[in-house]
Image (cartoon, rainbow, N blue to C red; front, side):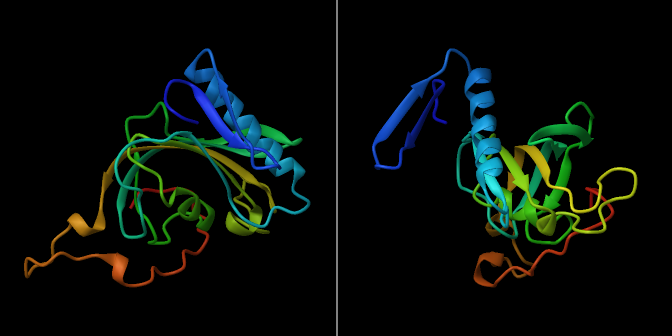
Length: 189
């Protein structure tokens, strides 16, 4: 999805196509449906599906960057969006997290890589990248695929943080630890 409500894509023959929409909402809704269709046409979803809804501006985020995020999470049911199980959209507090710290499910961290400030992204996360066979009691059934719409409101890049010696500290020089799915939901640090 590009500015001014149009989308571009390549077909199977590598031809470039564009679709212009009458509103941002129509473009966003179409993009969500494309991502859901990709999920439904996959024989077995074994990785996170990402679809940008709004691109945002600036540098893409990487492991080690600190983020503040607004999000809504749905259960993927009957080949589409099911029940909302978690959201902070109409709440006062944004979710704060350090990308790569393992505080949220692995699929979320993977799906947010490369996002830019002000960007919105649609994520479809298979159970192995979410809460797996255990689920979350009373909220997420076992082996459930999850869907998130995330909006990146604030970013503090890791390379902007300084160490006590005044030198720039960056996690980009070392591999990030592998995040582990957390069963306590999306709690703030």
